[in-house]
Length: 533
Image (tube, rainbow, N blue to C red; front, side, top):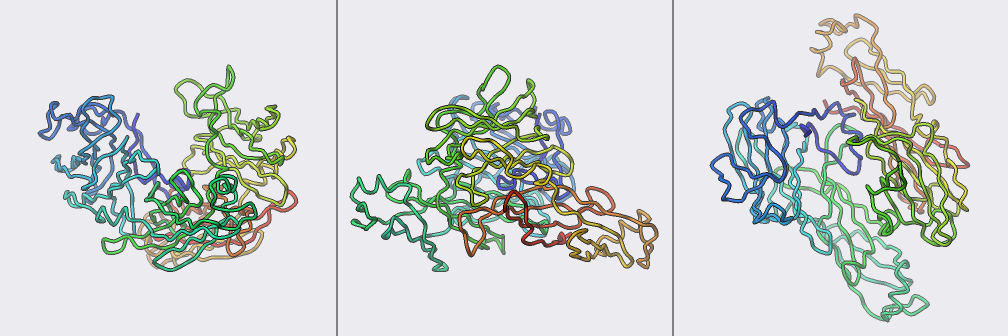
């Protein structure tokens, strides 16, 4: 089973808000809709368009999407040379387009840097034009965890780079210096913005190496460095557009001495990537997978391990193993009976807690962070529902003193904002929060023809029949440590889709920010962002 990618899957959104944009993935079996192409299987020899088996070009990934701009779905195949099928390093990586309308083939290299381990292909939409481009990811295999990327357009059937590959992979430049008190000063060289991060997690090693004394006085000058992108992925914005989000690791003495992470967003402007924002944070060791347990291995005779972390969640100062476990039928990707198991780092005793009454979903994941002023860090679980609205269910659990509990009742955590969505005269929709009474009016006139055809409006803009829109649950509930305080206690930022005459008729995104106090959610801020339709 392979997916026709209608939009690009974004890691930071866990894939959730993508369907909420009204864009869906459609499964097809082995390219059944396109008889021109061979039956494509990853790691099979590619022998189309004048390429023979002796050339050693293998299928690495593929998708079907409308990428030429003619309205017909096209097929794009990522191919590359391997000496043997079992090789994991691939060179001479190319994209092959089979135009869905003309049936012609076009082949283009992904760039001068065209080798990597297990390359992958994603369709992306950058900017407001709606054009679909192809993002190729090629892990380099180096100790810095850096990937090389290519961004290719096939508009009008012509393959060419959207952004020069060198510029696409350049990232941001930083000056990194250790300073007193086990801290590092990081300066972004373009804007001269300075950020100071705490590096005391590694103080024992720094003292042993003679870099600091035991009181935190710097004894040796250390100049760190930033690596290239370890991640560059499309990120859906509340207004329905996409940016690219890049992640760069910042290291101290050597690659393994990670001290910070730089997250940046970029927009496409006249063939160049332009930075929109940059956020530098202390390296998050709590959200690294546990070294003691592996995903997709058996937990007991019924359950498997779906995600892992290593963090102190009981408050005793020692890292614990945190496991997300559940049950799955054979060949299914839907997990049930989800629960979090904490193995005490000191005693090795285990306690477990169900994620709640809603305890099933797709691609469940863990996030560890402090969400209130308690002594221990908490566990946030997310699980996609798989519905057409692209919503997810969340649970926030506490294991302080090895006493598992819901930090926030699951139904309260997932309630979100409630809105009344009513169509009004003159191609308008009025959105009103039922509790706070915050109001936003959305202009529908760009798509008035559709609403006239549906009989909702007449040609003069008069509403012909009462029409009520709808509001989904959270497509995303994301931990954020808000500036200017950045106090280490996370808030939650939620995104909810607001639809009009039918579910795929996306109108706006409700953006909300919440804090947690005494077991209750407190709304800090809300906004309604109309989609750029």
